[in-house]
Image (cartoon, rainbow, N blue to C red; front, top):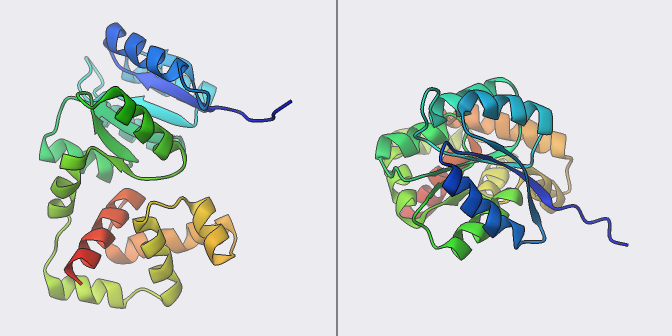
Length: 217
């Protein structure tokens, strides 16, 4: 008997048809399981705190409390689930604001269904997930004058730089801890420090920023 437990998913979208379609897709997968559905931001907050899911898919354009307000409220309440924006909006401002507020990825609803499921599985593993055309939007928004960038990188310790490079490869804290033979808690402390030094607010920002720097090297 296997002790394998599928990753739990909470879907937040005010369109029942979308929720039904995504549920049907997820039900075909052994390693993902829908544990709840919310049609509003308020309901999403209640269910997230009750169900403690591994992954939350969150629509941006909802009636009443929109996706960004919901995202902010979830993070302020200490919800640690991976939160992936799943929306039709590819507006630069929406993408950047979602990542700044703590989203772990941003996917567009017009994605191929198989590709969408693959991205959700990657998100569960701790990887940053973005629809391909959005990565450049985020990278552009995070660009800074080169002198400021050099100063920021120079302020990092060698350990923080090692961790930043691994974040850029999409590794989760757990995988980074294993790679560097340190504890998860130590990784978390280093991540907190390097984000502060680089004036970034999330791992996803850090990953895109570092990939951008490596591209210039």
